[in-house]
Length: 82
Image 1 (tube, rainbow, N blue to C red):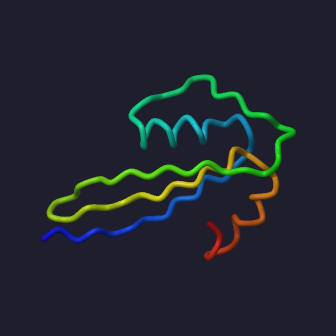
Image 2: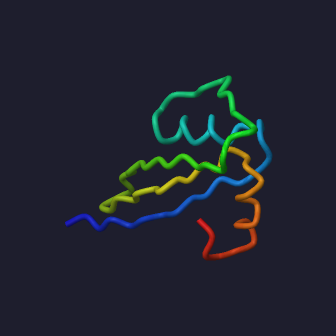
């Protein structure tokens, strides 16, 4: 029987550096070259998942993409963050 492990990933960083593009490439197998971000929007994060087999196990990645919003920068130093 396969064991399923969950891995939490929270992408933090400045706006426009490619966090959303990398997350979409990994989770959806598609690379978006020009994802536009509304800089005046309420703080918002997108959420994606992807399950990857590894040997006899499955690893489920839980991915939060903060879209470069300043509000999420306070999560960077916290081990409990995302």
